[in-house]
Image (cartoon, rainbow, N blue to C red; front, side, top):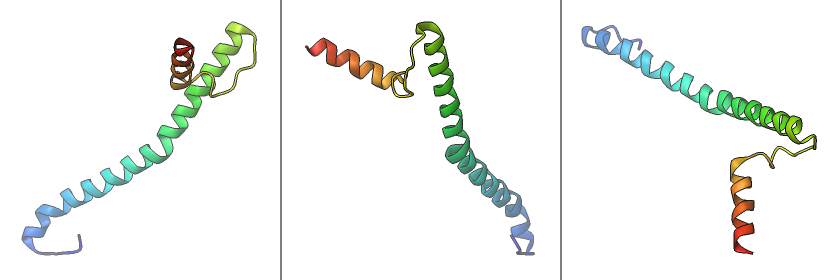
Length: 76
């Protein structure tokens, strides 16, 4: 990015775009996605509590756990 040649002048904007794209994708993947999943899970717990008036854990409202329990009931 510090190169001053004419050929490098065409590549500098592309290098900047790629660098910022990687940085933003990393932030979105490592920070925002887990936060959104946690908020979604908290909303599911709240809705389940409102519907059933019973305390449920965060694991009990996850689709994978529900399907796993359903499959285990079918086997027995």
